[in-house]
Amino acid sequence: MNKPMFFCIGAQKAGTTTLNDILQQNPAVCLPREKETHFFSLPHKNREGVAAYFKKYFEPDELQACRVVGEVDPSYCFFEGTAERIHRQIGPDTPLRFLFILRDPVRRAYSHYLMSCRRGFETLSFQDALAREKDRTGEPFGRNQFSYIQRGYYHRQIETYFRFFDPSQFLFLTFEDDLIGAPEATLERIHEFLGLPAFEYRFDLKSNPASQPRSKMLRDVIFKDTAVKRLVKRLVPSMRFKKKLRERINELNSRTDSVTPLSGEVYRQAWQTYYSEEIPRLKELTSLDFSSWNKT
View 1 (cartoon, rainbow, N blue to C red):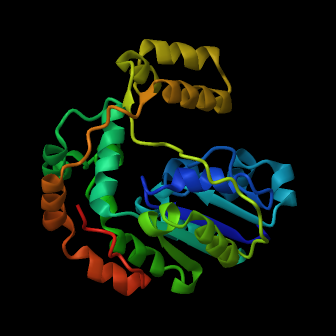
View 2 (cartoon, one colour; view 1 turned 90 degrees about the vertical axis):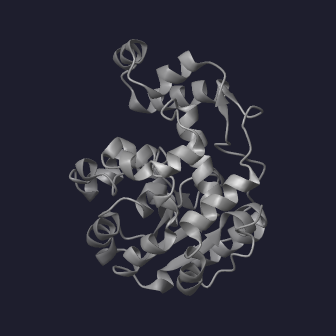
């Protein structure tokens, strides 16, 4: 790839879907046909080779016409080996930049927990799920679905990337102050960082909000290995169409008015137990102000 590239590597549940949907409006930015290819985080996909990455996930005409190529995939900050694969397969020949959106780790964990509940994977209370996390994340499914605490240790993830890339290649943002508090100014900073010309975006988007399913049966068809799901797979061969169908059914089946808010007591306990030492390390690595965090 002879054009500049960027990766928005995280964090999960920190507005990456919203950022992806905003950037998709700009023809100067070429993004994959589907958000979160997991190409660099999943070894079985990565073995296909980087040429397959561009052929499988990007439109050739858009690759030709764009100014910058990028991908938004929060698995890239968390799964081992991802930074090394990007460095080895993309880094040597391509000007690279990284965006990292950080969210209050307790609120991120709770949003992740609600997503696992919505998908029918989580049956424990939030406090019990945090207490049992180490016992449930030893295999791939559990590490993906139940890694509520671990994904919030941002300093470890950043330090891993700094072993392969220079800190000047990174733009660190916060979900609360930047993406939510000042979206227009934040997009201007992203544009400057990526070397993009000015563009008029629509910001009236709210992608992937916390919700609960209206129908558990429909939820299981989307997220679990059921007989109905296997039948749909046989009848609909197109992976792209199946993904759009799944997203649409999930959207229609979601209710945002039934989400239980995180209590202040549970928030404070989780912060003190798991993240009390996180802020000083993050400030040193990112030079960001995290004063909006650790508030109830």
